[in-house]
Image 1: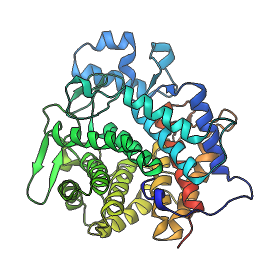
Image 2: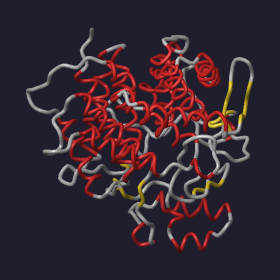
Image 3: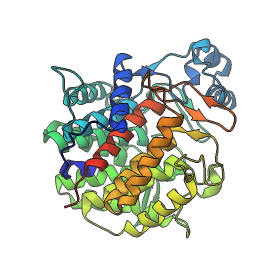
Amino acid sequence: MPEAASCAVADVTAGESQYLRACRTVLAYAEARGYRGYTKHDGLTSPALHALAGSNRWLRMLAIQLVMRAPINVRPLLGVRPTINPKGMALFTRAYLTLYQLGVSPPRAGRDWLAGARNGLDWLRAHSQRARGYAGECWGYPYDWQDAGFFAPANMPNCVVTCFVGQAFADAHAVTGEPEYLDVARSACEFLLTDLTVLHESPEMKAISYAPVPMTWVVMDTSALAGALVARVARADRSAALQREAQRLLQFVADKQTHYGAWYYSHPPSDSHITHDNYHTGFILDALLDYTDATGDARFLDHYRRGLRFYREQLFLLNGAPKWRHDKVYPHDIHGAAQGIITFARAARFDVAHRGFAERIARWTLANLHQPRAGYFYYQQGRLWTKRFTLMRWCNAWMAWALATLECARRAVRE
């Protein structure tokens, strides 16, 4: 939503779109459950799997993968606990703020969308991990997570979650003008620039780590996301020093774009089996656009346009279904669908055809990965079956923000 704080909107009175109706219902679904739910990598919250895996890196990874890849939701059988995910809460909050800003009629009498956003922001402030000795406000996942490159115990803060939460607070400041929200976003930048390991640094470029642990693994989207948030805070503070930090972080990412417009998941590419995947590509594109909006500096727009072309041509099917990777169609993942809606809806300022493609992705998603009566979204559609269960952050939080972003694009008026 960053640019929406200053966008003009048309008065839409002829009835709500199917996208806004779906956004309302998924928010109601989440509210009714207190935003608690399962998430993609939460297998180690199973007491049995936690005990069996112990401290063995490979057994931890196996436990997470088995739960994640199961054709049905085995979490209730394994005693996995539903949790509130800070990234999910940030996404729900951004959806609330977007709907409030658009003047969408409130969900019920006596409570507007801003009240939902404030509740989310209050929860996020209360669950910051700064008190553990970090330089700034920061957030992580509420479960133990073993990745190929590191182990993160429950609630260890990381770059990605902190960036999404920081953006929610930056949005809140843009919408309300209240300085305490900017204070939180500013503090999150302190964590990003102080507590995370610097993996590459030169006068022109900088790359930072995913988590505040010793590591050498460069994940491409982390520096992009950090640069985007730092750029927004730099604009608010009129800080040339922070803008320079943001530029260096984004320059590292832009420098690693391939000649055909893509980004690998890691640098060097051989450090990960993931090549060009869907939603991480969208993260980078949105970060480049956030930097441009915040600074007025157009140096990365050519990288953005080439990346957007690759994203559309290689990571989606013609009917709007999200591919898993550029060279792998299945599974069609709900996160990929949501990210595509967000990225192409935001790109509509350059060409209205991008909004049309965002709507095509949304229509495909509502037809294939939506439970309209209950309001939630399914996890994945495979070649042979659909995983008809839902994950609160992965499915519903992402789609709530995606649909709100699409509604904003649909109402935007070219000046």
